[in-house]
Length: 357
Image (cartoon, rainbow, N blue to C red; front, side, top):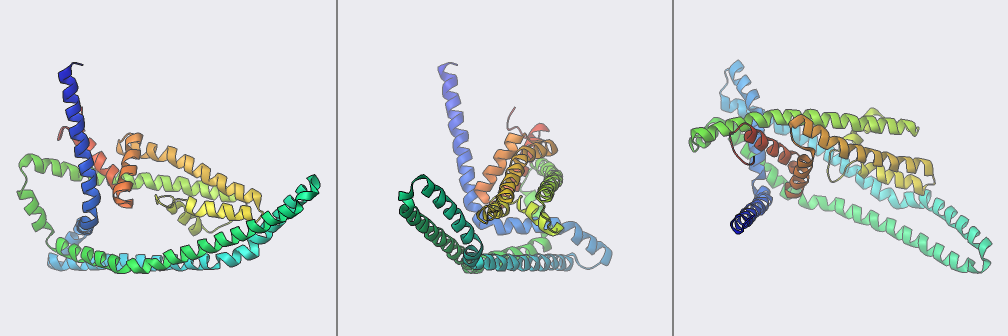
C-alpha cells in the first residue's frame, strides 16, 4: 500500500467514522423528541388495512373510520397498560414493604443458626477466639439487617418516584394519540406529499424497503415466539425437576421477562435463588441459579442463530444491532435497529442501493 492509498484509506475511515458517530448521536437526541410522531405514524400504518376495510364495507367516510379505529386501539392499549402497570407497582410495593419482616422472620434465624455452627467450629479449634467470633457475628447480622432495610426503603422510594414522571409520560402519550388521529385521517395526503418530494428511483427504494420491513417484522415475530417457547420449556422443565409446581401463567410471565433487556429472567430467578439459599434450602437455591445460567447460555447461543437464519443477518451483526439499538433508544432499538439493518442488507443485495461489496 503506497502513500496515496494509505491517505485515501485514512480519509475514508475518518469520514465514515465521523458519519457513524454523528448519526448515532443524532438518533439518540432526536428520538427523545420525535418518538411520539414515529410511534403515531407506525400506529396509523398498522391500522391502515383495518380502516380501509371498514370504509369499504360500511361506506362510512374514511376519516370517521380512522378516528374510530385509532380511538378503540388506544383505549384498549392504555387500559391494558394502566391495569398491568398498576398491578406490577402494587405487587412490587407489597414485596419490598414486607421485605424487612420477611428477613427478620425467615432469613435471620437461618443466618443465626449458620453463625452458631461457625462459632462452634471455631471454638473447637481455638476457644480463645469466642469473643471475637461473637463480635463479628453480631456485626454481620446488624449489617445484613441494615442492608435489607436500605434496599427496602430505596426500592419503595424509587417506586414512589414513578409517580413524579407520570405528568411527562402523560404529555408524551397525548402527543402520540393526537398525532395518531391526524396522521391516520390524512394518511394518504401525508404519504403522497412525501412521495412527491422523491424521484422515481427513490420511490422504488422506499417501496422495496416497506416490503422488506414487513416481511422482516413477521420473521422477527416468529423468531422471538420460538425463543419464548424454548425459554418457557426450560423454565417448566427446570421447575419440574426441582419439584416446584407453578401455574402456566406464572411460567409464561417469567419467559416473557426474558425478552426485556434490562430485566430478563434473572430479575426473577436470581433473587428467588438467593432467598432460598439464605433460608437454608441450599439444593433449591443452587438449582435456581443453575437454571438461570442454563437459560442465559442457551439464549445467548440460540437468539443470534435463530434471528440470523430467519432474517438473513449474521448472528454477530444481529447481536451488535441489538446492543447498539438498546444503547441508543432503549427497548425499541433492540428490535428496531436489527430490522433496519436487515432492510439495508436486502436493499444492497437487490442492487437498489450500494453500501458495501
